[in-house]
Amino acid sequence: MQKTTHPEFQISAKVVYIPSESRPDQDYHFFAYKISIKNSGSAPAQLMSRHWIITDSRGNKEEVRGPGVMDMQPKIQPGQTFEYDSACPLHATTGSMKGFYHFVTENGESFSVEIPEFYLVAPHSLH
Image (tube, rainbow, N blue to C red; front, side, top):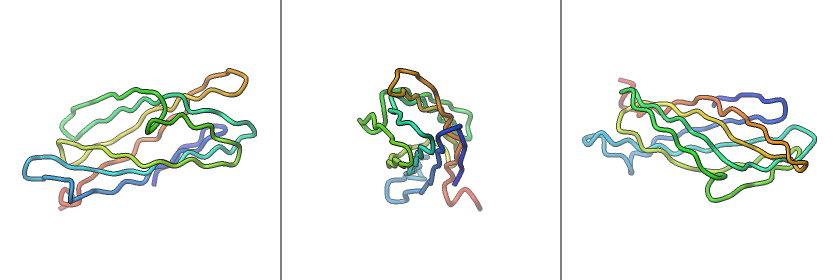
């Protein structure tokens, strides 16, 4: 698990390789991940958008931007942790993901929180 600290938010990720969805013989590897976003500040903030940078071991890079996460724009209260599950296919045995979440406070201030880089590694690539 990797974690980064923003003055008020901590983001962590857990990754699992999904063999049943992967086709290694076709260079297709499927990873599921769980993101936890904890607001340890004193004010609520709403997650408005995301920006992911996905890179595989072959040097292919994809950027994904969009509103919220999983069709939601959650307001995260002080002391609350918001979690969601998602997935990422790769056409390589290893890769990484990193990026930013963009938030807005109740008084209209916007800020970004870095998503620390985490790694996608197919089990058979470790041999």
